[in-house]
Length: 389
Image (cartoon, rainbow, N blue to C red; front, side, top):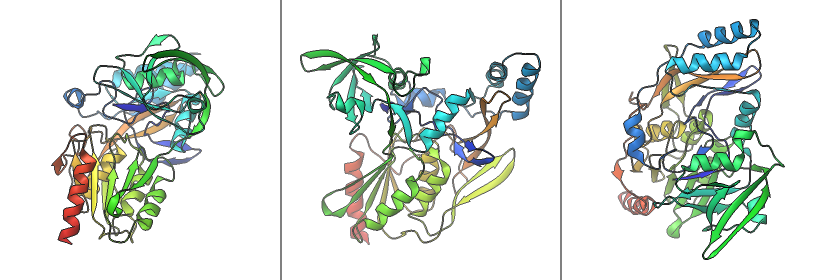
């Protein structure tokens, strides 16, 4: 599995009175951008899944208000109420933590600029270093082994825990604070101290394969992703296929997922969802490219808004889906601001694909199973789709 040192928890978040719908993802200390958070094994998470209960926001708000009236912490009272609710996706965040989440959804984060994954033997390997980041300036390279963070051994730890250590989440570390890394490259072992910085995410990467096939990888649905994808599709060679790589995409802003769907659909239904029993619908904008061959690649780390997009493209017959079954996070969270400025994020409903299929606890099953060579398999399928057209 892989991860990077930023918060990018897909969630519903708000600025002032205007709320933007987001589907929450795994409540961990960092963003999972690879297989599955915590274990690296898809079957572990599937065995643990159950449909998320719906919380009652007014109960949590009442507990917070009563605590404040008694001179106690509203946030702690809300945390107790949430823990009793049985809502596995609910959580309570301080004002600062929630602002970090908002920044992450805008494509900004605090960290050192490392991407990493856990190998089969439990070792943590650096897979990418962001250009201009503290890690890049210190000479860290892809392929280096990360042995420790601030003296704590990281071998065998879930990548999400390593991400949390890199960010300094336990201490509320901010830009300018330091973190000491233990590294290994071949026979060389060394340590260095970096200063965390405010960095920008690259949520979308585009590359061209031989023959004009365009691979669009979406790491998460942060602000502006949908328009970036639409531009990439417009700039792709005429008639050439597109591979939409959603592996490890833990979700994000639903509006961006819908805009992404609009790049490939000519209007129509993307998903339905309910909020406290009231049914609502999300629709694509008209004018998308409906003829270009399209394959979506997914895995057990494809979650939330990424599953919403996958389900729409599959149900609408717009894409062939390749890979392994997605995570199965189909519940809807909304935030409630507490008296002390902290935020309780609670499950209020669930969404369904255009055909009416629920995703929560089941995920989206691909049309064709594929392993680590899913992109190569997708390329082969595109060749066939091109011939058929």
